[in-house]
Each structure stands twice: as structure tokens, then as C-alpha cells.
Image (cartoon, rainbow, N blue to C red; front, top):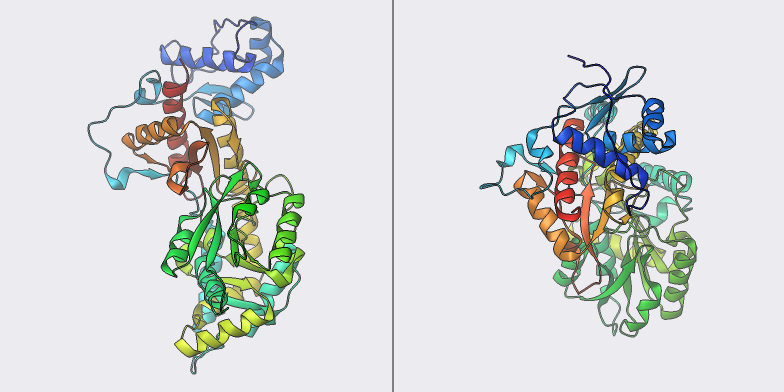
Length: 467
């Protein structure tokens, strides 16, 4: 049942350190908590409430938007703004949850980053692509270790128009993903006699990259990151003649930093002066919501860089397909090695990907997913901005809320007790850093799960950070 518009008793104090929109939002939230605003109650219009409270209408609009983002209110176009039916556990904001047992695995919601949402269009396009594969003759002889020429040609075209990376099929090697590409690159660099095997890595950074380097008996040198990604000046502490550095400049994993063009050029200059190879993992490059992607580092210094791409954030990690762009000498070494050990890319998977690129289905699926992620990015930013500094907003499939390391650990633990799994920056940190935080991934969850998980997270943050 829809209840009539309710008059709200809200007090604001201009001497309060909280902003006016936050005070209004807190007042409405408290009224819902106390049961004064029942589920289904229609709130006064923003114009009416602003007149009643004596504030600018924009202040009330911002407060309403904040509460809609958090899941307390429901804005219905042409009808008004209504109180949602918020579970009692979410209303109990002032004390952290103390569950006796974590909810069963089947009921848990994961906000871990890096897992994509698969739009229905992508599923249908995937089925059509495999019908094309089904009418093709079975692969006979071993394939080209670099990958099918048609696919590599289409990947070169994709990189040129989507990333401004001008390359050819001869410089492309088809892989099973970014870590496989990193492995192939380190294997080629290992052939250089007399070079100390050191991989410079972002810290916090991608744990799998560090694990692979260790597995290959390379040592890892941690390089700090800030809100703009890897700090190039800190490379002065790296061992002399460090042969390779692995970076994620488009949406630094996990902190979300976007490396500006000045820093990209500085990194390219460092590679030229030291003879090092930049291994550029173009993580999340398909998903930017405010600005166009910046030029790749590989485009700036093609003779000293390896570019890694993957379908894991678009079609899904289980597809196991990616690509690398590398200098000619490295491509030759990689294809010779793959042929010698039988490391060939799957022909049917390549046929399917070629079909998606050929028919334009890849581009359409990415555009659809981008719209979904853009909306969720804005909702997460609106819900969490009052709790601290956000990083990674406007790109990718996750956002980072910077917090004290101990606080972040407690927030993650409280969320886990309510069935919401999300990592902290500490999880991706190898050597001590000055900052902590939580990593909020929003790619793979359904809409209802996303709403519930965000409400729980906001509730926990309220109990931990708001006195």
C-alpha cells in the first residue's frame, strides 16, 4: 500500500561539520530507523521539503539521490520518492553485526573485483559464434603457434580503433589470458644471458603476476603506487638493469589509479634509458565512463614494451583467450618455443572470437556492458563518497574506498558475517604501505544482490565510522 506524503521533522545545523545534504540524509535515515517513515511512504517533493526546512532545493535533491543510491529510498519517475522496505538488520546501523555463523556459500554475495557481468546480448552472440564454429571442419594439423592469421588481423584492427595502438598481425600472439602473456614474455626475457631476473611490480598489485614471477624464479621488486598509479620516480630503487616491469596503467589493480600521460611518458623514457621492457596489462581499458582511454604505453615505446589484452573482463575468465603485442624478436622467440613444446592456442575458441569480431557482436556487447557498469559506478560513488576518499571512480568494474588498514579489515569482516565478501587492499599488498582500504567490485552481481550488498556495506560503514 502506498502511504500519503509525509511531513518530515528535520533539523539542520550550519555549524555542524557535516554538509547540509548529509544532515538531511541522516535525518531521513534516522526517521526510517525509528519507524516514523513506514515502507511505502511517499516523501514530500524536493521543492516542498526544501521550503519546509529552509534550504536550497539542490541540497534536498542531493540528499534524496544519496538515499536512493544507498537503497533507503525508491525514486519513481512521474510518481515521487518512496521509502523502501529495508530489512531490520540493515536498519541497525549503530552496532556491527555479530553473526554466530557466516551465511551458507549459496547465499553469499561476492563483491570481489575482476569478474564481469555477461549481458544477454553477449550470451546470444556467443551461441551464434559457436554455431559458426560447428559448421567449420575440425582442426587437422597443429595450428600456427602465434594464432590464426584472420583473428590476429581483426585484433590488430580492434586495438587500432579502440586503443589507438597501431600494430599488425605479425606483432600479435594469441594467448589464454594476461598471465599467460606475462609468462610468455618472461620466458623470452629469461633467454637473455647475464641479465638478473628481476620483475618490478606495483605494490599493491596483481598477486597472480607476483606468483608467476616467483614460480619462474624471478625476484620481485615492489614499486609504490599512488592515486595516479605506479610512481615512476620510485624506480630509482630498482636493481640496476632490471629487465622488466609489469604495470596496469588504465585502471591500476587494485587501487584504480589512472596513469596520466606525463607519467606514461616518464615510464617510457625510463625503459629507453635502462633497456628494460614494460609489460603493459591494459586492465579494464574497455570500461571508461568519463573520458576516452589514454594512449597506451606500448604506442609510446613499441620497441621496449609488451601489450597484454584479454576477454576475461568482457566474455569471462573461463573463455581463456587473450593477446599480446610484442617486438619482432620476442614474437619469434615465443612462437619457436610454443611450437617446440606444443603450446598451441585452441582453434575452436579462436574461430568463435573471430566470428564475434567479424560480425560486430564484440563491440555491441562491450557497449551494453559499459552502460551497466557506468550506472553501477555512479551508484557506488554516491553511496560511499561520504565515508572517505574513493579511487578508481569512472572506470572499470571496481571502486576503492581508502580506509585505515585496521578499519578496512574490520569492515570486511563485518560484511563477511552478513554474507558479503569483499577484499581489502591489504590482500594485494606484499610490502608495507601507508594506506589501506576496501575494494568494492560490482561486475558480476545481479541487480537485487548488488542493492542488498551495497545496503549492508553502507550499514557496516555507518557503524564503524559514524559516531
